[in-house]
Length: 487
Ligand code: NAD
Image 1 (cartoon, protein in one colour):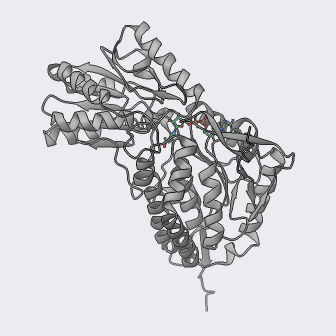
Image 2 (cartoon, protein in one colour):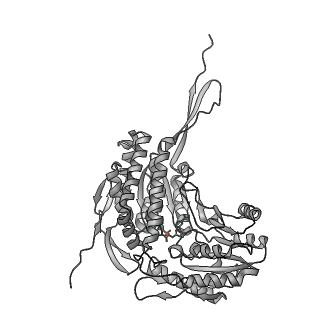
């Protein structure tokens, strides 16, 4: 048999590519085939220590701390340009490592990553304190200083984009970063590090330490040299991080899960509602924190809505992510597929009706057909728990109050949507819904200029927009005594 040499990716620490100190590696797979596509060095606690120290040095004594804010902005812009001009290669890498349809990666992940870099490049020289004339006998003003070394820990569903939601504002603010990508999807971040060097990011400013959450992630969270942990991932891990951060009084920003309600009223444009509700729940195989996985539909249109959603789900092309016509690729792993299939069973046992989908597709890879559950009760597990797979739970409501009560009746508070032609109702409900984002007559669009995050189990703080810069900066007061001695 012909031996194929797998690409090997090293850790990126202090501007250099290095093996793990204990030489450990792990494989990364293509979820569409189940085959290995590369080996990656696995950062140990010792390597994490090297990375945090490199980030600290870069902050305290490297060229980064001496650079002007506009120079930092120019470097971020260079990185945006490099990503843009290598968009095809990056999309291919991300598609193969994460099983994401290539058309969506080009349109969404890479485009949004470039936009993120450009947006925060613009912010770099506009982050400043203010003069606050507190007293007549003093000049009192604030500075906004970088918070310090940032530990960025990211999930596998939008690997590059979410990494840049953290790296771009951190660098704009003058911080340095140690990024831990998800073990399932480390490749795009490692490739991005090459572009970062080419863009002029000095050694130690960005460090990439792939590895497991249990070892690499935990070492990063526990490291006393980290000032802020910016985490996106599951509720359970987020809770553990918040506890661990408390010991060292580290700052935290947590973007966690969701079970977002999508409210469809009888006066909605039904064509548009069905179309957007379908992509709202099935986009990225449902592996989206803000997936509209609870669709709440007014009684009088319930049956028609379910019928039309099922028609749409059945026409979705599930298959090879590298085919530009594919709508839905695999889920990320065998484990994730089995987890979703378990929820399909749970839903049926709870008494909901599986109207379509919820089956394995194909012989290899982790493909599933999009599932639609009808007759879902508010308290059922498939209505309350985040499945993170292509599963729509469709519930009935009788009026506005009923709809809001159900929509707000989960432990999450990330996103929600209202479909109605009545503008007054849309505004009134937007105010009543417990969510960081409410969409009206659409589902799912986001923009780097707008804050993102939620309440309850959906997390703490906001990413994106100028709000993100609050996490990455620390205010300092300067008080200059102007009192003059009596003559
Ligand atoms: P996860 O929590 O298992 O892992 C996320 C990251 O944390 C990975 O890099 C992982 O290796 C690391 N990690 C795991 N255990 C750790 C530990 N003990 N210490 C430090 N790091 C650790 O989540 P996942 O399965 O990768 O991603 C799916 C979850 O992410 C879903 O719940 C989803 O809702 C959430 N998510 C939220 C948003 C948002 O913006 N709110 C966006 C994307 C994903």
